[in-house]
Image 1 (cartoon, each protein chain N blue to C red):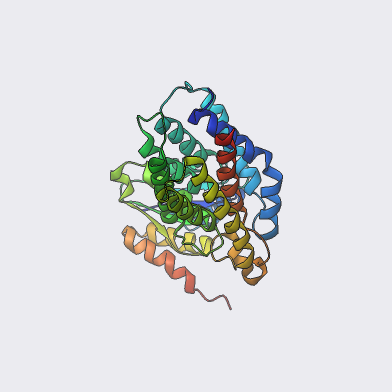
Image 2 (spheres, one colour; image 1 turned 90 degrees about the vertical axis):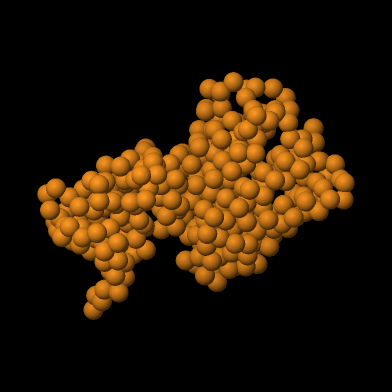
Length: 130
Length: 208
């Protein structure tokens, strides 16, 4: 099953999104929040993100949901620090973080491939709300 | 150790820490108001890390330590950006204990490429690249005219200063400031400013 990592500048945002996504998840699914800095301040933390990716990977790859600007740069940097073997199985979804995370979790719970999970997450961009 | 890269980095770090408020105020105007706080936190961590190293390490080792520490401690976009820049420059400094104009220019070139790749950015988007690229161009031009290292750096710093001024005239299209669109005009870019402070501090250090 594809794992999901949520990278936000805010610890609370990442944990809140994880909490909402968990409602739609299967018990064995890996959804890891990587929000904020180690000391709790606002920011993104390369170590936290790379550890989250490692924990989320159950062998089928990991989709990373990101919030603003430097979340992408931090994730790219974390990927460069990971082993080649895992790096090839991680994709950042270009999607709204909350809607994307929930779509990704649902798709992953069906046992879909990484490419399908990423594409479903990115599809969340077009969800109409009203 | 006077004249070492170790001391240069300590002095640059101190300059950033001294300008924490300025950088934060600039960022508060058009961004998320954390550039000074993040950069100061990063360079405080760099200072602590450097103290655990032998000061006589080669340039590559020192710059690699700076880069890795910035990446892991800054927390904002400037961490991966400056961190990548220092790591790229570090590759050219491995086993070296002295810098000449050519190596310095090459280090700046690879650092700039690193920033462009990491930030997926180009010049003219109101970022640190609007300082670093003109500084590099001026440095190379002065070096080509057989100027001394100090003169090359002087040219680079003057172009860097103009680059900071230039950022006031353009709209931000990268980073948090891009959310402001037209409202970012009139404000100088905080990242461009921190890049200028680093170059200017290096020049002042080498001068005396």
